[in-house]
Amino acid sequence: MLFKSRVELLEITLLRSLNARMSLSEKDVRNYTRLRKGFEGEQKSDQWLEGLSEEWLVIHDLLLEYNNSKFQIDTLLLSQDKVYPLDIKNFEGDYSAEGENWYTSAKKDMKNPVHQQNRCVILFRSLLRDLNCHYPLEPYLIFINPEFHLYITTINPSLVFHSQLNRFLKKLNARSVKLNKRHYKLAEQLVALHIVESPYPHLPAYDYDQLEKGILCPKCFSLFSEIHGSKLTCGHCGCTEEVESAVLRSVTELSLLFPDQKITTKIVLDWCRIVKSEKTIRRILGKHYMRLGCSVSSHYVPWNE
Ligand SMILES: [Zn+2]
Image (tube, rainbow, N blue to C red; front, side, top):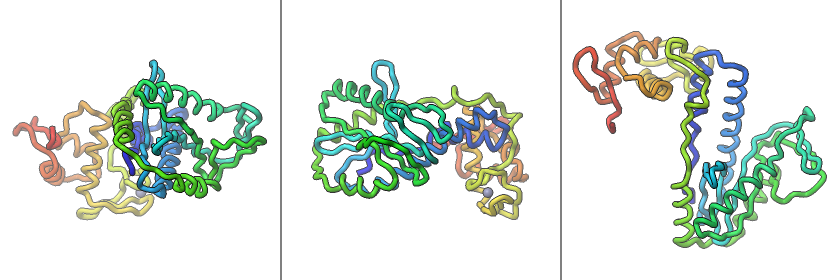
């Protein structure tokens, strides 16, 4: 049973938007690409784990802390007598491992992912002990990308490669799993301990005036270039979208980028740019948001605020 699903990191959402609307430094682009690729790998892994029988408890994406050290568990599987932390890697290309050292295809040193996982397992074990849980841990590194190859001279059963995914799942499904209240309680405790980090300190500096205005295509993230009646068309990928849903998406994006910005007809008109009618913007905002104030200074807030 899926106990906690994965949502896209807000940092990825915001970097995608900034990448489309301003010129990011090479370092920021690299960071954005790394996060995006990691997330894509995790999504593929989540789909693969949908093949796990319903009895298992599946918790995706936990950021936990022990003794002031934070650690990430991409996916945690709970069975009746064991806990399986999975670390998902979306590496692509040829890598090699010689002893404790790992190298990229360009023969560059890289962090040994086994060491990284060991650190996480040590912290997680201590955390579980504090929660009075003593199930043994069986960690795995899952290499989800079919285009990944590791030249390795030793056998390490905790590494699972793309060609082994089916068999690995079969092996798990063959284990009998009967969970009780204690397992569900543990899952609840861990999810309650999950840390939600603010993405804002990690973002490059940006301000409203410097960002390109317009509505981003939801498929290829270039700016919509054509509007016909109530439909927008992307000149890049041909995708079309109703103006109403596109404006609402853009308002959400604006609020995420500028959490202190008041949502007014004027600012949304400027932000969306391609929609020229103030009446249309006012109608859409009036339909989906609550209007506060009635003069020129009125602004809109979500209904639940
Ligand atoms: Zn497009």
